[in-house]
Image (cartoon, rainbow, N blue to C red; front, side, top):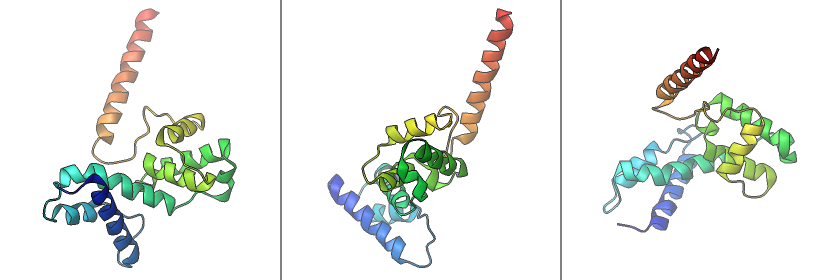
Length: 158
């Protein structure tokens, strides 16, 4: 099996292939790259590659989709830009993409936890904010169950 850095470099090369291919639309999905790398001899499975390739694609997408110039002031203006993009959904709304776009805006590295903190200060409810695939319905169900439990507790306290 190749080293982790070798796989990451190959994933970045696959991203560049997508960027150079006029038939592939931005923001780029990591699905094709994951399948292409999994087909290589000695490489991990599709399931294993997702955790390596996906963050690379999301970071690159964010770096190539900068926030408005006003976000470069940082603070509240950056938080508003993060909140707005997160609300739109899609891969550009993923935390890795948002952190990368924030890094470009500020000219320094911004971590995912720092991005989440900025989003929360800008009014994003981290407990209910979701961008991705597969679990949004379950998240909504769990939030409704938590809300129902809180209402029941409040009614019982009266």
